[in-house]
Image (tube, rainbow, N blue to C red; front, side, top):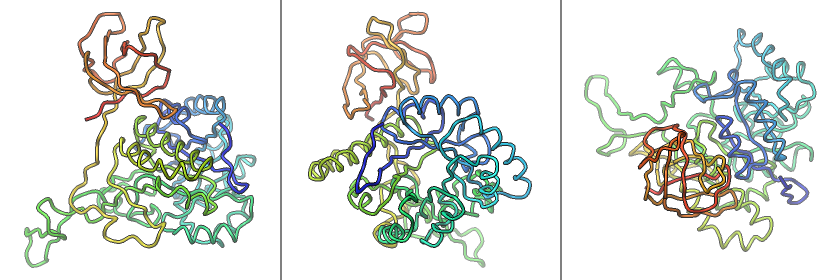
Length: 414
């Protein structure tokens, strides 16, 4: 992966991966680095997560493409987590990742002891809101700090001016926002008995709420007048695709995408769009400006919950919340990833949603090209013709009448 230099700093595009398959898509579709979780001590307990063997495979694949891999171990640890964390870090010695993402000072101390040569990045979960905090972590030996999501670009620029040049700043630029401070939330623990700070968030901030007056039990009154109820904590998703210049000029080293539980289609769409936008801006700011409509159109082709610029240009107001629904916008359906070719124009696909012979679908390529194709033929693994592919995860061979490449994504407009 080539470097993307601006004012002497390399701009990194950092993409999440929920599985080995998604990691490969992130790498192929433009990531400079990916972040993944193991089966313990990360903050996405419901994500598929990686076994140690899958981590090794992922690191090997990424490094073959000059892409870095960061492993999350960012829970807020309790006493009985510490012995397990020590053992986990010993196991991670053989993985070969490029950095650990940690929020807890105790976990940080153990990681430094067990893995002294591995870079450590301080998670947003540690509430990093000022340059003194950045300098503290620098003195402790951290290479990078992830900004709290509550910071403005002006504040980030001030941090950059007051920390060492070789200290890196990582900032979320796209994805789900949390209604709690930098993701530290007790709602899930209180309402569902599952602790967000231990990786088991049930996202109660997305649920529907009403108000009950104490003397009138059973009378539910909407907080905001609407026939569908009120989702008072439900933030819009962050999207900074229109503001790449401001992000680059603020001194951020790593542009981070949220979404370690997202599909390959989401990851491919977001990674590819930001890759194009960053590269276009660094090459020619005017060309970038002329393509903003294209980037916005492309980024909306994955599931999202309406968009906001978060805290970057000041404190959010009521327009950053969604009060009437908890649904995602959904323009395209993910059909599968292209695998090997049999030499006769037929390609293997592990199908994700139903599609049929004669249907028009779209091939999404890593370089930014989208190709509309008609499905000419589908066969099962034994070569038997099929009219449609109704069973998820079924292994198929397809003919789209055009040349495909491994890791191309198949999708359909809804």
